Image: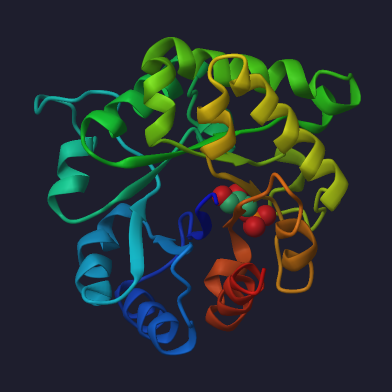
Length: 253
Ligand code: 13P
């Protein structure tokens, strides 16, 4: 059975007080199920605090980004993977579409960051997905294949064993437009079939999250698709009650 995950990507939201309150709320509200990881990804300045607040509980903490450089050096503003591991982070989101679109992260940079994360002992949550134009032009699968292939070229077949994937259609992020459960399932199945060309075991065992306007009222339908292993949640992860309900939808499966 594949591990499921419900992950909250706070993006550039939060504060010291919010971090404390949200983690306390999740600890009190969420009944953790062993095969459903609960992950919170605050902005980097709140990570150490989040790790401390979550200590001793089943709430896991992840970063939203890491440097593509591994060793310490003159890289102003960068945060290396080993630093995230050092403070107790276990996961890091890599290649979110906002980083690809707004900060120039190419498939190659995303691939390098994926390797940096693995080398630092972190589990990268590698995001892939197409824009609306790409989908309308019939290019969704080829875009996603290229995103996956760049990562494969960098981490090799074995590297995939340490990766969680997230399919996030760009047109569904923050728009209130969710992929239908069938649309999500179709791409998740495509991703698994594409990875199966490398290794059938890797393809069968990798967790693939869906992200894009997941809310308490649509989570169960999406998560119940056979190739969907949970979600990467943006807006709804900023509301503790909503996030707890989304987790409960995954735990109920
Ligand atoms: P929303 O849930 O706000 O659409 O964001 C999805 C996302 O980008 C998670 O990484």
